[in-house]
Each structure stands twice: as structure tokens, then as C-alpha cells.
Length: 88
Image (cartoon, rainbow, N blue to C red; front, side):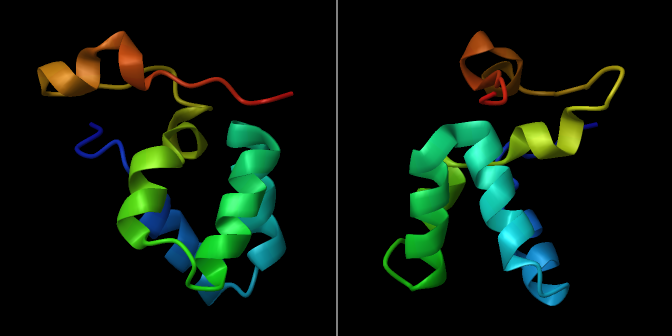
């Protein structure tokens, strides 16, 4: 059950706790390209807000890439607008 699509703060805190800034930036780059990496660097330097990152770089895909399915409970979450594809 996915209650929130904006998981950036969760993953940022996990990677920070593990001292894995490189992994955090790598995930942003995987899902959002170079712009994601740059935004992550700016966020890490307090140049971008937590709300900006959650809205523009939610890292939802990182949570559900390997899932066989995802259950959501609001129309916003079930719309096609939130679907993601990793940048390859």
C-alpha cells in the first residue's frame, strides 16, 4: 500500500544516515537524469527546499521498481501522471 508518492525525504534521510551521499545522488540521476543529480547536490547544500525536492524528485520509483504491484487509495495516486521510468 503506497500512502504517499513523495518519498524523497525518506530516502534522503536513509542515505544520509548510512553516509551514502553517492548512492543518493546516483538514484536521483537514475530516475531524473543529470538534472536530478544537480538538484540533489543543490539540496545537500541547502540551495533547494525539501518541498521542492519532494514535488519534483519524489523518488517513488526507488520504492516500487521491484514490486509486483502497487496499491494506492486516492484518485491522484492512481492517475497516469505520477508514473515513472528510470533514465537509462
